[in-house]
Image 1: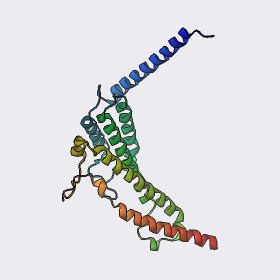
Image 2 (image 1 turned 180 degrees about the horizontal axis):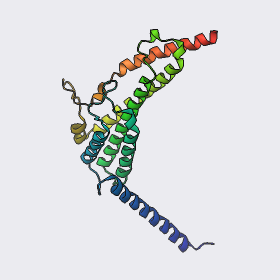
Image 3 (image 1 turned 180 degrees about the vertical axis):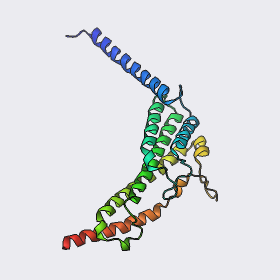
Amino acid sequence: MIPIKLINEQRSLKGMKKAVFSLVLVLFLVACVGFKQGPYSFEEGFNYIKGLDERYGGNFKTEQMDVNQVDSKRIDAFQEDLQAFASRVSQDPDSLNKNKLLQFIEARKQMLDSEHSYLLAQGMGNFKDLEVRSCDHKKEMEYAYKYYKSAMEKGADASDLFDHVMQDFEIAQNLIGIHPTGSDIDGRPLFYLSAWDATGKLLDKMAISLNECIAKANQE
């Protein structure tokens, strides 16, 4: 039977090892990725992400679906840097700034996911005039449908997260931008103005065409 004292010492040793590992991880992130020591304020984190935007040719304020998007070849690396920053921020003591900043990072990631899916859908072909598309392109249409649907879902998630970040948090409202009720000036990121209604109508048409192709195949 292991003495209780020895068990407690083993638990204490494991706790110390875990704490040391966490400290080493934070120091490693600070040294290798250029993160600052000490907790990030929301504004500091916002400016760090603006720096990532510049590095990868993005601008979350002006990106808009089907108008201005990050190069698809650079999105994966961008996402990796955002995840590394989220891991760094998660080490900070719990605070409103930390929680809002982590939400903002996730919103930016979802926004990039949405853009990536949209670009993949466009790569499947031009399905905006479905009348001239035949069932010979059914497979491409299926992929396009899946990607457009994912783009819409990720885009909605990103917009919702931006709203949560700005709710009752004036510094985020000033940095991200809002559309005051009754105002003609919309200061929100242009991503909010993406043509989701048009994409939704396109998905409805694609669903009809795909069902017709399936019915046609069953009759043959």
